[in-house]
Structure formats: structure tokens, C-alpha cells
Amino acid sequence: MSPWKKAIQKIDPEIEIDIWPAIKNKERIQFAICWNQPDHLLDNFPNLKAVSSLGAGVDHLLSDESLPESVDICRVYSHSLVQQMNEYITGAVISIRRHFARYIRQKDQQQWQVHGRGQVAGSRIGVMGLGAIGGPVAGRLAQLGYSVSGWSRTSRDLNGINCFAGRGELGNFLRNTQTLICLLPLTSETEGILNLDLFKQMQPPGWIINAARGNHLVDEDLIYALDSGLLEGAWLDVFSEEPLPGNHPFWNRPNIIITPHIASLTQPEEVAEQIVENYKRTLSGMGPRKVVDRTKGY
Ligand code: NDP
Ligand code: OXD
Image (tube, rainbow, N blue to C red; front, side, top):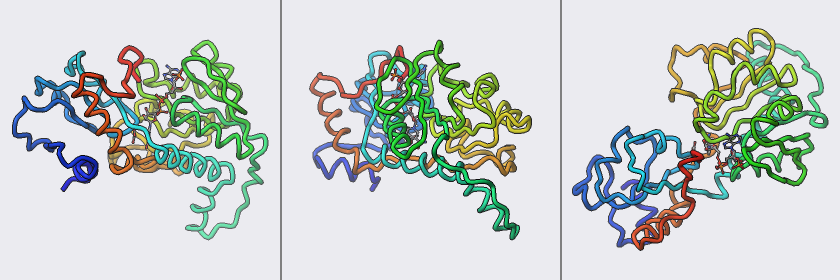
């Protein structure tokens, strides 16, 4: 049995669940839960009222233009998602600043070479996106002693974080940033935001950590920035095409660390209760919680 079906029916065994493509009666579907569904799949269900993402991101739902406006889009949240992202980002930042990735490579060549102290104090970190995940990640890095700036669409006031907002303050945010962490949702405003123009405004030589979406990054600009010394390295969990194709130039770059979209994984049992609540609210006409604002795109 699918782990999602199992987790949902553990809470309420009365809920009937069909798993695509084995859907018996399309008219009966009122609520859907999806991850990377094929385009146009969701316009096949005339009585669909709401659709929930199985993760924090909703770009895979918003990019399907055939999804009727009347269908609510919602997402899930869990402390575990934040905890996992905290571990992923702090692990990456510490590995970068203490040169652990370099030392792991050096061992393969029996090379004994010290790369400087890489101390925490004075290291300037910038977090793009201060939402449900980015906000706590920025807070954790500040607790560890890093000097942390954050950037969001609207103004935020977060303890210990130097906050900037909007395109008008992006330049000032970047000037303060050596290690840039992207935790933005993918929207028409943020697509391609990790580009050469942005890299040029950072404190050189910088690092990029992208754990948001692959389409935030302009791949060829990253390679150019690495080759020209503007950036020292990149730590990437997400890619415009996943799995990353075997012939992609990122694979052969020692200064690009690649993880296979594992920064923070949603576990069915941790979010099943929210899904059941949203399903019941949808059927009752109240509408789901954590609804995405389609005009903002997140
Ligand atoms: P939220 O929607 O809670 O927060 C989004 C943040 O981004 C907000 O601070 C928002 O600003 C800011 N933002 C949005 N648009 C802009 C813009 N145009 N300019 C500046 N700031 C902007 O998202 P989450 O924190 O829950 O998640 C962020 C993303 O992380 C997800 O969309 C997903 O793509 C990715 N993710 C990746 C995972 C992985 O395993 N790699 C796991 C989980 C999530 P404001 O505060 O003003 O609204
Ligand atoms: C998410 C993800 O958005 O896993 O939850 O990328």
C-alpha cells in the first residue's frame, strides 16, 4: 500500500483514496495530493475543489496553467521539514567555512594541505527567503555566531538578523554577503535570480547554497562566475532537471557539491493529519488551511 494512503487511512479509515493512474471514477475526486504530477492531469477531474502539495513548494502546481482558478492550492508544513533544512544548511555552511569538502577530496590524493582557519566569527551569510523554512534557518545560523542578513519580499523583523526587503534593498543585502543561501519559492519574480549580475554584487569570493529550486539558478552564469573567480564554489541540492543529466557540466566541477534533492524530505506520517484536516475542510465548504496566494505565487 502507498505510504501516503496508509498514513491518511491510519487517521481516518473511512477516507477513500485512489492512486493515479488507477482512478476508477474521475467525477468522485474532490481533493488531490500531488508531487510533480504530469501537466494537464488535474483538469481531468470536474469536481476537484482543492489540491495539496506533498511538500513545501507549490511551483509544480502553479506551473500547470490548466488547473482551474476555482481549485484551492495548499501545502504542508512540519517541524521536521524545518529541522532537516536547518541540519542541511548548517552542515553545508560549516563544511564550506571549515573546508571539509576540500579535505575529503584531498584524502583521495593523500594530500596534506591546510586551508586556513575558516573561523565562524566574521563570516557573512545572506539568506534569501525568510518564510516558514528560511526564517528559522537564518535564526539558527545567527545562534551559531555567523553574521546573518536576510532578504524577503516584504519587511521582516527577526531577532539577530539584519533584514532587507524587496528589489530596492537587494544590492545592500548582497554587499553584506559572502555565503548566499537561497530558500525562496520559485515564482515569476524569483526565477533565474541567482545570475551573474547578482554574483557580482556579493562579497568575493563567494559561495552559493541553493536548496530551493533549480530554476532559481542560471547554470551557465554559475560556471562563468566560478571560472572567473567571482565565486569560489556552489553547494546545490536542486536542479532545473532532476535527476541531473549525466552529461551536465556541474558533475565534473570539483567546486560544485551536488546532493540529490534531499535537503528536507516530507514524511507522510508527519503531515497526514494536516492533509486529512484540509480534506475535511474542503468537503465542508470551509476551504483548506495554508492556501497559496496565486497572485504572489507562493
Ligand atoms: P514560504 O512561502 O514560507 O516563504 C517564502 C519566503 O520567500 C518569504 O520570506 C517571502 O517573502 C520570500 N519571497 C517570496 N518571493 C520573494 C521575492 N520576489 N523577493 C524576495 N523575497 C521573496 O516558503 P518556505 O520557507 O516554506 O519554503 C521556501 C522554498 O524552499 C519552497 O518553496 C521550496 O521550493 C524550497 N524547499 C526545498 C526543499 C528541499 O528539500 N530542497 C524542502 C522544502 C522546501 P515575505 O516574507 O515577504 O512573504
Ligand atoms: C519541498 C521539497 O518543496 O521537497 O518540500 O522540495
